[in-house]
Length: 124
Image 1: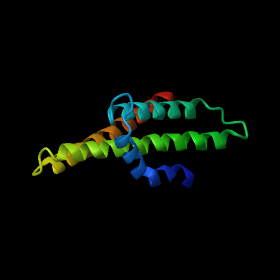
Image 2: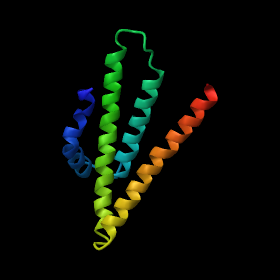
Image 3: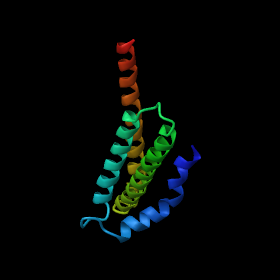
């Protein structure tokens, strides 16, 4: 499982790469879209992959590593956007964006878990 966390080591290089080399004329938006698509593809692949073959754990590890790369890259780009927006309002920009970020994170964690509980109760 430690292999899945390796992409976080290269987060700095991901940020420098995305800032230095524009993709389709954009430095951030195109990388966000591309990495989001990679993350969706990795999650779908994990779900539909058969578990019986002996090679399945290795493929799942590679797919989860790709998911981790995409997640790390998205995190680096979003952190850069937060810093950029914070500079527009030096007094309250950082705290307002941090609170908004934590509210979104909490909402994104609570709602899917609540839906999963309801779905589990319906299937039992």
